[in-house]
Length: 213
Image (cartoon, rainbow, N blue to C red):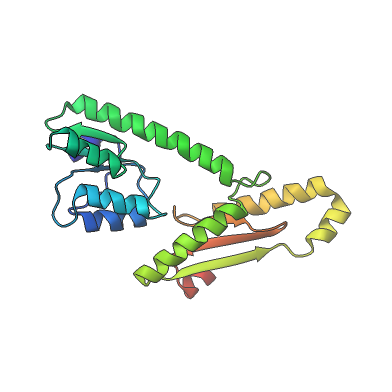
């Protein structure tokens, strides 16, 4: 599977269910391809745990396996899989199904981005921050890793609005949001508009020194 897809996609590998759960939570892949029979946790058990975790629940899972029979297939669907490919498989069929599910995930991401975006500045909104802060905080506590949060407020913003007008004020908010966004280079880092002229930045795996830097 890796050889078929590595030329077109970035592949993250896991050798068992426990490792797959960790990789999925830390890396947030767009799609998971998984066998049913694995050492330790089975594929079905792993999929059920993925779906029970808020951080990984929306990642689609395709089962690739040699098991046969309606009962086994039904268990794969019931555990949360979005597709089922039996071995031996046609390589082109695998590629096409992966492409289709990635396109569906991309469309879902666009819709979620629209729901979670601040209409004025284009960064994430308070709703996104509230939901994802709790997830990142739990992950930080579970893995004993640091999590830094920056609260950024524009000083004298009301005076600026009063002097130059709300259109200029909106432009200033967009400029500040863009400046903050451009300063972040890791996919897991994000900025949200917290209030009128307030922004919040979350930096996973970042200690106090890293946050100050």
